[in-house]
Image 1: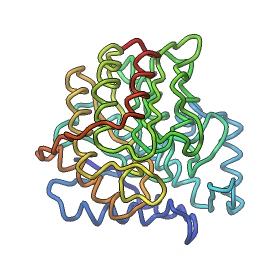
Image 2: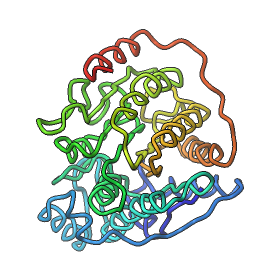
Image 3: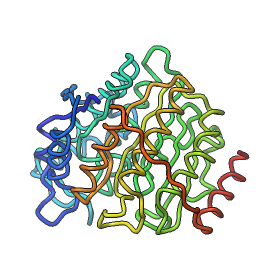
Length: 335
């Protein structure tokens, strides 16, 4: 795979006890150093216009001033230093780089994956939260739909363990971007209910699957096969962006989910198959993942799938509570 990376992303210093640290990116790069066919590209930072396309200009100026004054605690979870401003622009720029690469034909072993930080999917139109300042995947998808030749619609599939409230907020009433989220029910930020399906001008363009704690490979596969697949086939996007958080891993310290490294490989394989079927350009953008070994192994697994690995398909039973969620989503979206 092609990985988007910029050194400035390491300078966003969240402190010694914060789960979202530069060690995440360092761990990913150490893991990828052991694998074949890895390329790095630095892209370019996002410009002001690209960020303002999905965020309130006054909010952007507030973030800029906050960082210029040395940063500090924005909220209980979200902190910044002076370098956070440049890191956030770099992270958004890497997401756009990944999308541009995919649209320009990078696929197969050249499929792009942006590994910037800070992450983005909790950043709303006018608010930072959940470690996020700018919504990287939203910035990239919006740019593609509005400006890239041949891209009239996009899907963002968010497999982070937390619901991407920011991405949903930004696209809730747009019918050209379809947002799909699998997340742990009841976990931060408490959004992402089944009946949150889109605004008046975008009915059924938001699909939320809030799975119960303890869900793993079987449950995630069922959501992909029974909900994501038919919904995406109906929507027929030109671009497929994966908001790739790995904090649903069974060894992640901040969730109760049970997805294995192999399970992420199988989801990657299914996503690739769906994107190929719909002739959609495919790009990955890093979100969460806080167990360093699990994160590095999972990103490495995504790379290995594109490098020829055939992941094992889950064959266990789906939890009954998860089956009920899937049925509720199917009914809400008439799938």
